[in-house]
Amino acid sequence: MKRVSIFGATGSIGQNTLDLIARDPGAYDVVALTGARNIAQLAADARRVSASIAVTAEEDLLPDLRAALEGSGIEAAAGPKALLEAADRPADWIMSAIVGAAGLAPGFRALRHGTTLALANKESLVTAGPLLLAEAAKHGATILPVDSEHSAVFQALVGEDMAAVERIIITASGGGLRDWPEAALANASPADAGAHPNWDMGQRITIDSASMFNKAMELIETKEFFGVRPSQIETVVHPQSLIHALVGFNDGALMAHLGPPDMRHAIGYALNYPDRAHLPVARLDLAQIATLEFHAPSPTRYPALAIAAQVMETGGTSGCIFNAAKEIALDGFLAGQIGFMDMAGIVADTLDAMSSQGSLSIAPQSLEDVLKTDQIARDMAKRIITSRFEQKENA
Ligand code: NDP
Image (cartoon, rainbow, N blue to C red; front, side, top):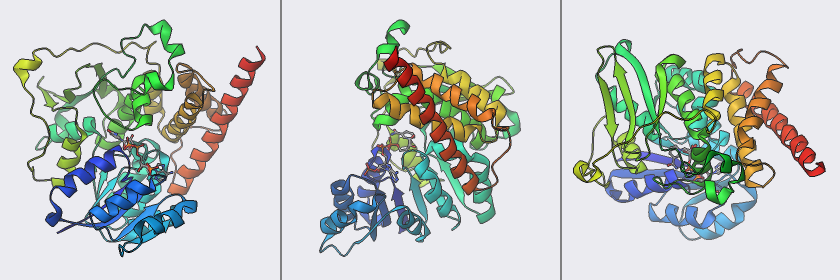
């Protein structure tokens, strides 16, 4: 039996992972499930898959979790320390699907035990890519990409020599606002940006798809995970979301990975790797699809892409600052403090402000360095939002 733990079990990726695991109960021994505020879901899933322990990130919700698990024999725990302890529990395969920088420390901890880490939490590679890969190498652990684009690249590279790779093309759906006139984007609400035409995902990543901050993160992730130069990474808008990524080789060949927009494919690939198992995802009917469209992303509609290009060139702490500022800008947008198109300005201004305090290209040396930079960047982004908000109020 494969011992598995799922960090972020109550979220969109976590639920898709549980869907696959629950279809084959005899094959898995579920060690830990973690969540944050959705205690009812966490407890119900822990009971359904007979997990050994359920952990909520929220300390004040421990009594609720205990009550929901009463009589089940399943352990309950809470708080960031409990998350790390859950990552210490022996497991063969761990899904890292907490949203945001909060997913970094548990994933890092799991690598210490030489496990296989299925990495959905893209923030880990964006904020601390080199450190994460070094930690995996040090402990003989394996990181498998779960983001659909990176899983696609990974699959297209099986049996290939990285030296023969000329370029990697990451596709983008264009998000929920892709058909809006550019001038109207400034007035988009969180509800407008939170509806995705193709994928069913968590709220934050769906809004990040509309702004292409999600794609920007994925470009940085590509550079970190596959070790290619920024100039080798391209983005193309592909509204159907059926080709997830393409790899171009030095003989001119392009290997494309196609599949339905269903995260259970990438999750299932990582769960069964290096084997391929039957997965309950739709099969594409190419004759019915008939047309695949592609076009270049507009730099004015999607300013996040240019910021990502800068971050990839700079390296060092810039990915961490980029992610922290993006998370705070998204909070500001959700809270109605700033508009949809203001988010990129907040991120760019935070990077500028932080660079005036010291070079961004100096690489963080430890997880603690990353978490410290993350906090400073968050505070800076909050200050920038507050001053902009006040200016708007006073105008
Ligand atoms: P969701 O918002 O749906 O779920 C997030 C999960 O993290 C939930 O289990 C949530 O708990 C938990 N969580 C939230 N805050 C904290 C915290 N501070 N500490 C610990 N746990 C916390 O996110 P998604 O599933 O959409 O995304 C998860 C990750 O995977 C993200 O990094 C995202 O970028 C990435 N990803 C997602 C894809 C998708 O299709 N959704 C595709 C590719 C990558 P609770 O709900 O109980 O509060």
